[in-house]
Image 1 (cartoon, rainbow, N blue to C red):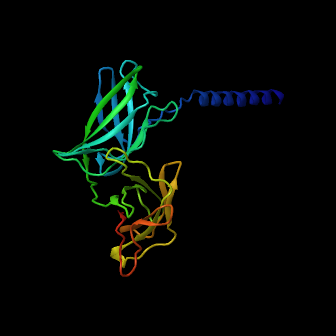
Image 2 (image 1 turned 90 degrees about the vertical axis):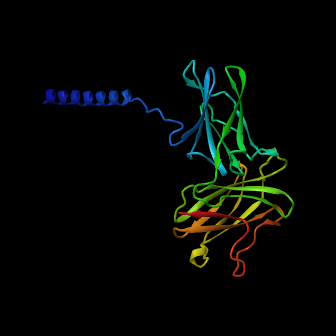
Image 3 (image 1 turned 30 degrees about the vertical axis):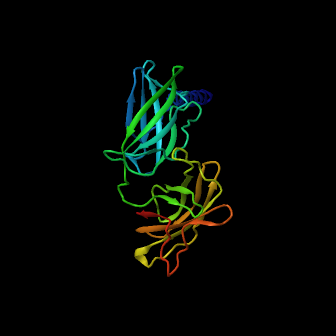
Length: 284
């Protein structure tokens, strides 16, 4: 009987050892940091390549999230210390100007540098956008200019507003989220910039953007539990809540208010005034 118990114990230990060995032999899957993104441009250089990625198939008027990777051809590895900066420029027939944009940044040890640009207008045959990249590569300062194509959004919906406020300041307001609206209370997010000069677009802080979604094709009804957008110092964006009670076309009526509570753009929706002059459009 003791012999049977001894053999049984040996079998259990053997199975446990094999199981642990199998677990230890498992190699963690390497994640692709640009999975789900599309490489829309590539800038080849003598000893490296700059790759430009987007969630979209191409750059559009409005808010564009952009990811950048720089590959060292000698080591066949992506660099983490390039410290890139960028400057978008629109070259028109008689003038030129920049666009609101964030800094490019990466997390520690990350090979992906992320940022966003808000293009105010599309490009065409005679007026075009160019993005200037400056970065460090193997201790050398590098500069590359990339001509990019910017089109109107395919869905034709209004998600970017460039306007003059009642304070005689020109603002750029662009929709960010939700990217995929749902019949639910959605996290609403937008960016707000002011035009200081043709080349400078500072982020506007501590304003408020009121939110009043309506369905013009359904009696212009609204929805409950919306939350006005307020400034987040962490994201440098405006965050709120958007309640969508059914699928279809929605007009998100907005009002921009400064820190003193004064309305700079937009109006309340009433029976006499069915829509604000400041709005976003959604359809899903």
